[in-house]
Image (tube, rainbow, N blue to C red; front, top):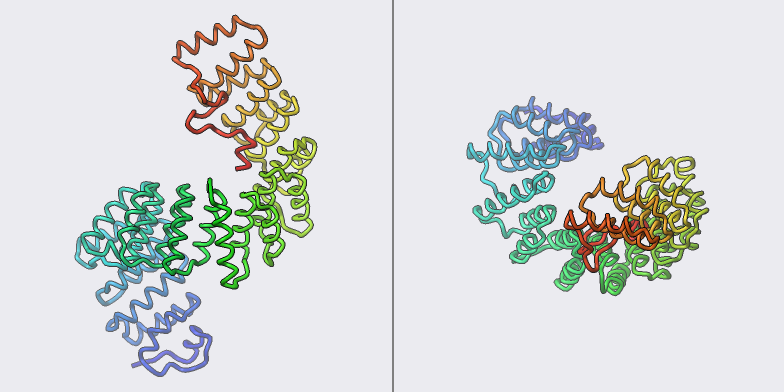
Length: 490
């Protein structure tokens, strides 16, 4: 049997040793680092007749093409169609994996349907994780996840930790955290990956206390949390309504006990957690101790945290230091710096920062940047300038930014601009009852009772009334829409 030459081995592995045993030819595919080298291994397999008789060699070749090709799905399907042997389950699952990881993950499902219809593949514990990964990227996740769950149950693999991991992720992406948790609770033998997915799922669905509880259980059960679990739970600690700082400190202690220095991701997560919880000294200590802080996210976490807790001068000092150390600010950085100006009512500093966005940093202002400026201009009573800024925005205005201007009009008694603002808000949200209330109060304070009566008739005709405890500017009584400054400081 013809064997690959020494140059072929060197091309694939970088080594000069000759392949002397037959099994090594199939293993060469795994060791290839370029498509060119893999093509030479493929050619050697064809010439030697290896692909016609060895499913292991074909499987390794297929896996290598899926890993190295710019279009793994096309490469896998093309090779699968050209094989002179019947594909085994490993080869078919490898193709499913390539399709699920492609830019069009939905392509995995017609391929899987054909396999089922022909009986070519009995789906097992290695099949469902790839299908569930594809399902998590579909526009409508839930129906597909439920069907795959039922199919996994039928094949007796729904309690497998890796299948359950895919189910938890798919259900959580669909926003059905209860279903995800039920899957997790039923699994008898859990692993680190499954716990990590549950923690992440809770965070992504805003269930921060549940995320902390799941992480706590994970550690108690003796599982070693990796970087993904640590960053997820620290995010939960940063946003938890209660107990976040205490839990965050425990997580930090766990990281220190393991002896690992904080990299950029975990270091940033720690800074964010401490800063959002108001532990500024600890946030600064972690920040100063980081050896990697060349990414804007690290600085943004500290700047926004300082701004949120009223440490505006320090936040702006950190912003200036960031530039001195050669780290380029991004849009989020400028939101944090402008938020600091909002808290300290530093209008002129905010003007300078706003003007510098495009000129110095090449950043086009977004709705949050404009929101900060409108808030500051409104506080200063510069309502005409605030209105002009909204109308000249490069992005579409929303009810929040118009609501900030309406609040400023109420505070300064400017009826004329308030009337125009109400018109704009009603265009965006015709059912917003709060704007009528604000405008009616302004008319009443100015003694314009005819306008008050007209508005009351409009409200009565539309069956609108002020709901006790509701925002008078916008949003529902159950969840008030934050003002622009609140929105950027959360």
